[in-house]
Length: 94
Image 1: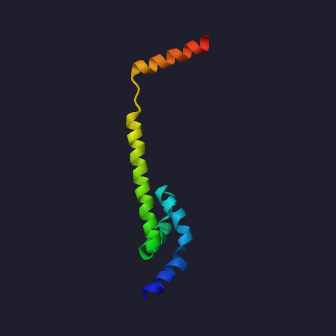
Image 2: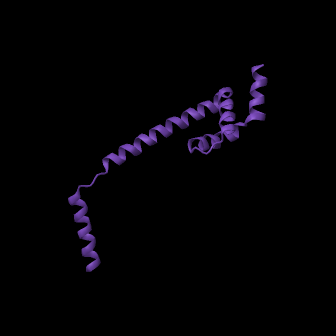
Image 3: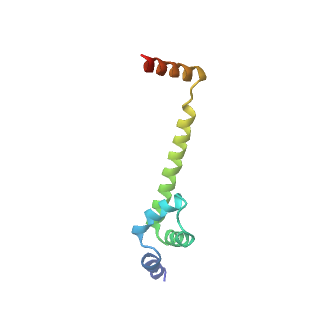
């Protein structure tokens, strides 16, 4: 019975080759309600695609964390900004 349901999910609901694109659409907030239901039904039945979705989530989380850390590291003092502006003015005027 489970094998039959799995085949139904893969053939009728959503084949595996559509899952990566649907996951990306979901992440971007561009997946319709019906698309989300179809994706979740597929992920519930297909261990390979569920593993892929989990890895995508982990990568997304790590990249988001890295970007936030990098943003915190980049900070210029007002004096540094003013010195940079002065250097640009000198280059323009010379």
